[in-house]
Image (tube, rainbow, N blue to C red; front, side, top):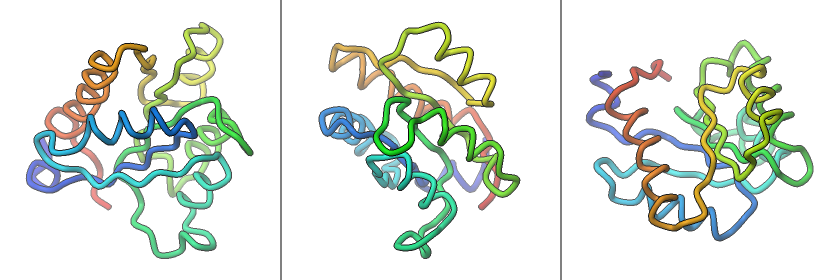
Amino acid sequence: MSELFASQPIEVLLVEDDPGDVLMTQEALADYKIANRVTVVTNGEDAIAYMRKEGRYADVTTPDLVLLDLNLPRRDGREVLRDIKGDPDLRRVPVVVLTTSEAEEDVLASYNLHANAYVRKPVDFEQFVAAVRAIDDFFITVVRLPSR
């Protein structure tokens, strides 16, 4: 376990266009063990600009973890994942695909694009919260993340 992240919150970039899913994810992460800092962008173009620190995102901190929906406006999650994992400066940032899609082609495409995990969003609120907290738990207490 990383000493740095065992005692500090991590920076999470949530790329999600559904306001309900944003709220549920934020609630799941709020005050759970360590309160992570969650930034939300609602489309694929903003996600890439954020990751590359372009325009209004020039001064942001590179996230320690990206939670990425696949079905996004302006650029879909597959394109975002391809761009993140294809960039030598960004590829080490873990990306967890968090989506409603159960399609096997989406699972395969995500892993072929080097997603670190693929998690289907449960429809039930309590199961959704449990899934997000499991992701948080894994990346806070089990995995050693690279230093910023």
